[in-house]
Amino acid sequence: MFEAQQLVFYSCISPVHMGAGQAIGVIDNPIQREVHTGHPLIAGSGLKGAVRHHFTRTWQDSELINRLFGPERNASDHAGAIAFSDATLVTFPVRSLRNTFVHATCPSALARLKRIAGSTAAWAVPSVAEGHAQLASAAILSNQRLLLEVFDFAGAADAKVTAIAEWLATNALPPGDEHEFFRNKLKNDLVVLSDTDFGHFVRNATVVEAHVRIDDQTGTAAAGALFYTENLPPETLLAGLLLASVERRQGPDKEDLLDADRVLASVLHDQGERHGLHDHLLQVGGDATTGRGLLVIHAASGDRP
Image: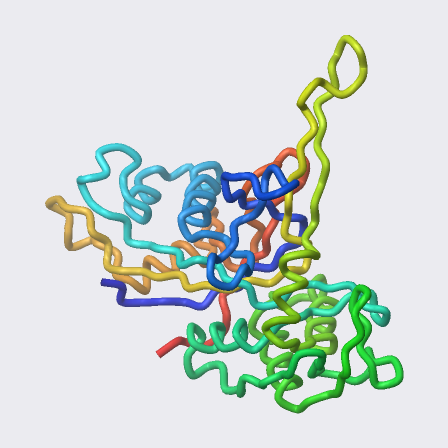
């Protein structure tokens, strides 16, 4: 049983490929998606593995890592004390005629965020008809129309969306001057589309990259070496829960077990030379050597009851 939890946001600052492990259509390496919505996600198991690998390389404290995540060998000795839920989609960047791109979302994505955020998310989920858009600010409209990719939506500013945008700008991104532009962008350019319209963009507006291996002898593409990889675009925002229980290891020193709050603090916050996840970079997924998979992790303020 988990005794503590923390809402965590994951902001993509590079293309991110968390592979689904099977080809779909012309895409050889698609990203992970929910079956019922088609929305991209990052599986909790992948996040936990990436975090453990990151800590193994940076902490140089294998004993504490085993206490938090479970033993690397003899896994039956005890379970870990930390768990990651799937990171589900909150906003998705979509090209716009005005302001380059918008942070698009939909009622179902917002409702799911509100559910895991608890009472700290004191805003209402709007409802939006197909072909329409509700905006945090009317500044991105052209003659009362919102132009996204090749699509044209009837748009209007809405106070509900403004409240959501302000909450996200405060809670989803780190403080500091280096993130100020992106906080303001999220605050001003949040757009709520219908679930149907949003679903089209998350299925068809991801980053698809061609990869090819060059034959060293001929200097041309090796036979059968061309493949296509799908990525989440930069500025995608996801959210999930970080869950903690009392440390489960056995032994004579059980009085020194970390409680759930200390487990969360150990993973999230800097402690001496050990850097936690909060407001730091994490690399997840494939193509790390080409700069893919970089996330900024931010623990939202406030406690979930």
